[in-house]
Length: 213
Image 1: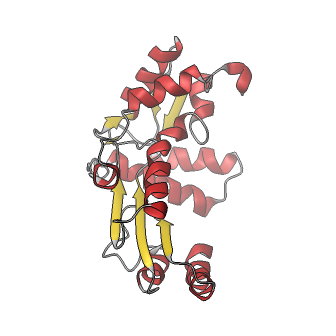
Image 2: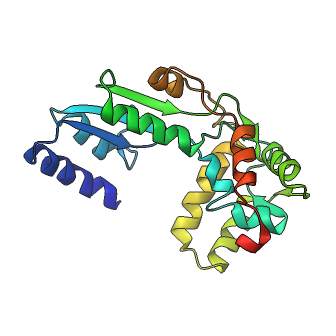
C-alpha cells in the first residue's frame, strides 16, 4: 500500500523540517494489528518524537451525499451487501473539528481517537431518514457479496479493489461494525452530530437534488 511506504518518509521529512505536532487520519482496527495496512504509518507517527494524535474515523456519513452512495440515493435504490448490519456513521464535520483541535490545541498529545456517531443504524434506516428529508422513496437493496463484486468489476473497478470493498461491507453485514466510541466527546467535550442533523443539512444544501447529479 502506497501510504504504508510513504508515511514513514513523510514523518522523517516533517521532523527534519522542525514540525512540532503531527495528526494522522487513520482508521479503526489498526491498534494492536500489525497486519493492518496503516500500521507502519501509525508506528512512524508514534515513534517520531513529536507531539502526535491519531484520528480513526468510522464510515463517513457524507458517503451518502458526496461519494460512493450518492448515485444510489438519487436513483432511488442503494444496492449494497450490508444486509441488516448497522454502523455508527460519523459526520465529516466532526472529523474536521477533531483534527483541527488536535493540531491547534494542547491536550491531545498521545491520544488515539476512534470517531463514531452516537448510535448504530442500518443502511435501511439511513436511506429511510434521507428519503423522508428529501420527500422521495429511497430503497435499500441487499445484494450478496459475490453479486456486488461482479457489479463493481463490470463498472470498471479492479477485482482486488472490489473484493476489498466487499469485505468491508461484509463486516457491517456480519455485525462487526456496531461499536460506539467516545472519541468526539473526549476530543471536543461534546457529543457527535446525529445522523439526522447531517441529513437535514445535506438535504438543505441540495445534496440529493437530481439536477446536481
